[in-house]
Length: 444
Ligand code: ATP
Image (tube, rainbow, N blue to C red; front, side, top):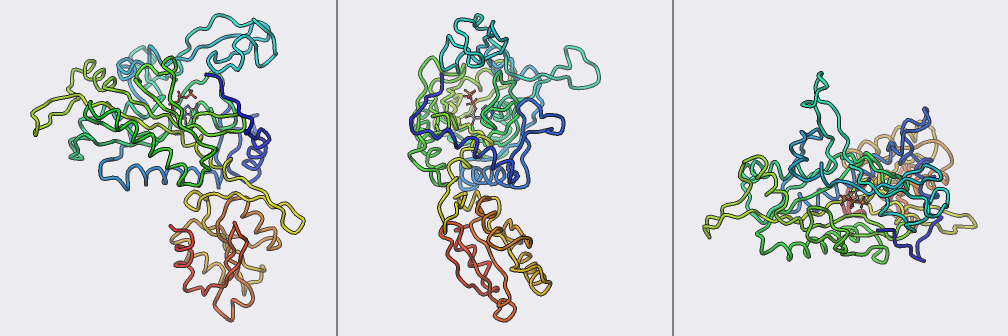
């Protein structure tokens, strides 16, 4: 489906965030000294923290705080048998068209105008659509024969299906229960782009929730609501989020119902996460292909059944990008524009920045002790260069919720100034109460 353009989408925000990401070390093109590499990105010192925080917030909501979900970390390399059974070798394809005028390739289902080339503007120059398989294959081992073919997983989900019995037994769970996984996946996307929105290498956060067949629809509705709430709880404005059920012709080969959580990106509404009702498609397919039972025997009812699966599948990098877009704000302060990332404290790369007022040793030594006590609990930045105002602005742009300034008075009164990112209000706090103060203020 083509992207739904909305009059409320702020197109200029795209360049603003791409520039800020590079300038401040969130994300930048990979292998840039060699001219970059095909829409791959590296995540810098604050980007890696943001990604970790997104994953941590997801794990907390999906595993840590649930008695009915356990984790898994399955292999990225997998044998063709997995993808044969799952249907990916046959059907994990996108429709590819070539423009006869300029030679560029496009995904037919993402074109805004199906007859017009977005690269050169020519009309009616597309070839017939061909199905292009998105999986990356490689060779495992030193002999490059057909038996050595391996695939890089294009989703983490198959690990949860293949390991279903192993996990259910060792974790002593029974349906309804879930298996969650966060990890790298690879898709040979025809048209990567829009910064980190669509890349060939990315990270996913997926959870397969196994339920008695009769309960699948109810659980699908439950997870749609839960997943939408997760983004709102992490500070995304409700008017920039929506839940969109897929049309029947959009459904993946395994899905009987899917709803997307969509975000209002600078180019319009687009997918953040898909919540699919996969039925018993995967467990049945792997059971048939492997000859192993992948079902559940309910001792209380004496019934044996193949559980149905509800799957919330989100992108880590795509979510991080959306959180940056949603958090970006500017305001006038004493005739100057202040840029501030109003990131939720749970997502903010640094929770606190410790800033000695001057570079004099009598301030930097104790300021480093303050850093040491805080960094035992939180990710903390330490910065002693430049004027204090500029250091505050830098932290505002990184989304750091609190700045702690150690000044000349601190030497005498054993207290520091704590400045709030959003209100810029400052309060004086005794150093020995600082960890508690920060914990309470951030709600962490
Ligand atoms: P699309 O239709 O946009 O290609 P999809 O519907 O195939 O995506 P899913 O298979 O549902 O995507 O993947 C689950 C989530 O993984 C997506 O909602 C998205 O957040 C993330 N994701 C998928 N493909 C990419 C990609 N190429 N780059 C970054 N994130 C991705």
